[in-house]
Amino acid sequence: MKIERELAVLSDWTPDEIKMRQSRFSDWAKNRWFVKPVEPLPPVPEGSTVEKLRAKAERDGWLKEFDSIRECAKKLGLDEKAQKHCISYKPKHNWNLTAFSVYTYPNAIYIPIKPKHFLKFPNISEERIQEILGEKIYWWMPTSEMINEFISCLNILISEIDKRKGDDQSL
Image (cartoon, rainbow, N blue to C red; front, side, top):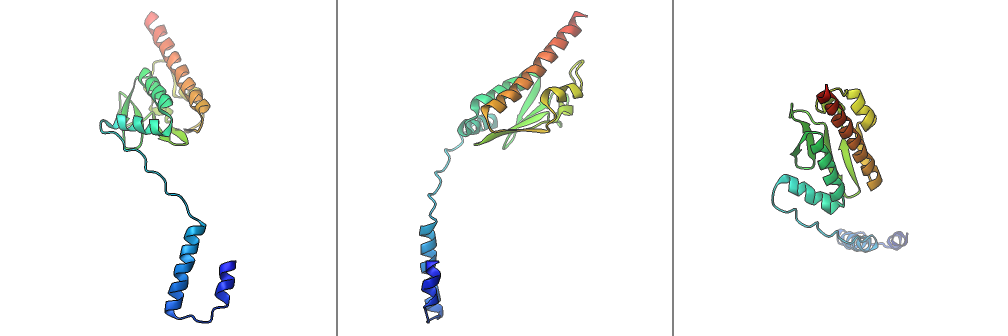
């Protein structure tokens, strides 16, 4: 390195000389590896936590997908609970359980799933729910295509539940 060659020929190593060289080396390093500061994110709007999470999803570029997942959860009869960093979807019969949660990030949506915590739907087993949603215990979805696949799975689950409800009512 050029700086090492320059240091090698120096004969004075007093504390003042070392501080001066340290300052020079520090200035050189700051200029050499300068990183432009990141612009601050716009402030999250005041209002409900759900609205804050929607604003975050919009900033992250996932608002449409976020809202689609919310709509599916409502059709499944799950209640939503806004938390600091995510929305959790809970069965009406027990708010201590979480069927799934939705976290948005600038590069993906993350959804951990617990099939056994879904509503006790008539004539549909936990195994069938897991078969529809896949064997994954979470979905990490960095693309709209993957998110749409998850939403399709939720829509299949919705249609099966609706169909089975209809079958039960016709008996």
